[in-house]
Length: 447
Ligand code: ATP
Ligand code: MG
Image (cartoon, rainbow, N blue to C red; front, side):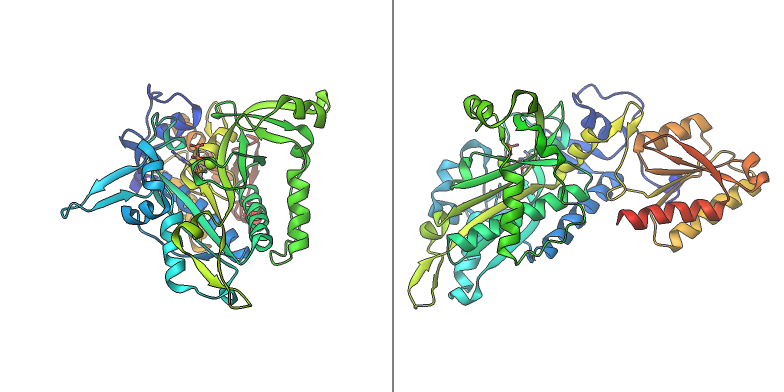
């Protein structure tokens, strides 16, 4: 993309309404625009990152064997009356009447709808296990929408639902989700810690939240420092293998890690030596639940077991805050100049700065680098505007592209361009060919 042709409405000043850095940087770099309280338009660059994150979430769900689908944003109130949650959900639910005075709602989550789909089509234990998920907009009329996409009213969420024949199988689904979420966060460049959680309005017996440490997080967390050393890395996971999944689950959930909702000082002191105890703020980026037969009993989602007896299915639900993740990634990865995108989610893999737009040779080198990257299928942002060099550098730093190639007449004369890492700030001079090779190699490794 040539910057002169792109839509990147940058803000020069810090927007007064933004209290936290990620919100400020998303507004300043023209990624989002508030349309009304807690509701945003996703401008082209924000939309690009949202889709990249969504794509990684899909890839990891696929690896875990979960099946994508799409349910609507508007739901009939009838199903929620069946489960008993129409009244229970309270003011966070946006209730709507259609022209026939029928009650609808903008879905805050989808347990009812998916249970209805399930009970209409699945009757036998032979069709289990089954995990269906979708990535769809949700609406919760939050009392205090704030911090931009972090606590919106309309937000984008991946939510998945597992159906199993008994508790043992449902807990395997639970473990599978825990691992697949950990993998997802790692690929997004985030360190997310699973913490024992309350089940809240979803209900149920088991739940873990995933928290990313950040000063501006809304949760207070307490955990054993040793958990920070855990990583899945390249470990091969066989999601069908119950024992392996249980082993990884145990490894990640045995150290003490809780949010303020479940924290208990006496247990913390008993389980964790003082010098290993960490108390911090953190952002909730996901949550998983096992709730047994709560919805299947209320809504008659039964299957025939191997003896031909009708039994309610065991279920769980699992959510990742896809739009919130943008905020969380920026909170975890920025400096005083702007965003520093992890390679896996960056809106553009490479930025090219032309230091002397209109100088024929410089223009040619830029165009040729730009063309090569485009031919390779890379997203490249070429700053071909007539702005001053200083302002071009500031823009690239603000929008956080991990690798920058700077091309000026002096370098061109000597056959070199400058490659700069956004993260370290280090630059090296290379021929255009080597510059391209260096950057493509980095992305191939990051994949
Ligand atoms: P919170 O405690 O932050 O209100 P929640 O526990 O009610 O969130 P869940 O029902 O667990 O949310 O939803 C799954 C995920 O969706 C959360 O972990 C979070 O990442 C994201 N999420 C929830 N509410 C919002 C919101 N208002 N804006 C953006 N993302 C949200
Ligand atoms: Mg939650």
